Length: 384
Image (cartoon, rainbow, N blue to C red; front, side, top):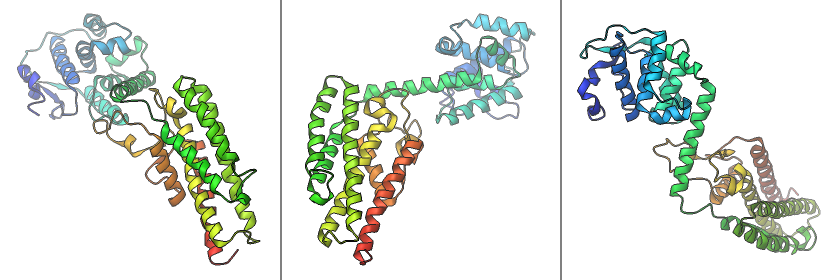
């Protein structure tokens, strides 16, 4: 603690900045800028002749310590004098107190500090920054500081949303700065080609139309897809990719239906049945991995945007900000692992699912996987 408050030693800050119950008001979680703001608040309270540090003094300290905050949230008015005049109109000055006199935070300021901690925790931040302190001041609605901020047009929900967007943009900018390259597409293209090849390997009886149809459609579409991405025609690439994945999905459903239709009549030998079911089970994983990869957060291109919202909560997203890899974002391998878990465990295991479309697709994938496994088990015991 002593190292973190070295800059306050001149005013004996560890002794002077205490809450009303005597606890130290400068825990390790506060950023250096917040500490500077609290030091300025102490000086403002002393100049106003106040027996304690009130929210209005914290507001003055906040404006003095973080000028960038005023430009982002306080509509460009960064003059401490202007805010000091607003405070004087509402809470007139008294005789200044002695510089060595202890000034605790009053009850309202203690609540502001608690609110700031809650806002930081709500956003998943370990440290408490000036933005969190500003939100804390707005939450203490009956204070002079909140009145001044409301007069400036600040509303709690709007400021909170702006703060969250600001932090997302910072994280995205950092991620882009350290990213070596955009999300690679080639693993998904390899999966498409492999899926098409699997359909080509199925028996003729399990193919919708000529056995080579799905394989030919996907391979032919992959060529313009790759060139469309290379030349920046992303809308065209997106449409063609959906056509290719849709073709593979329809082939999967059709082949499974034909497999089920032939079971009662024993149209397939045990070896053919086992091989076909295994290939369809693998196809099920690849097809749905492609759907998740392409639909989640608008696809690879959408995930590069600052405001991208994933329909899945991957474990990496739940790490603390100081432990999180800023360059990380889900790629095809993550969606392939998700699809594999859904086909084997019939659940996403360590990844939470948020959106209705994602839940629907995972239910459909689980049903297909369960159907294949159930059919194999039934055939194995000669039920069918």
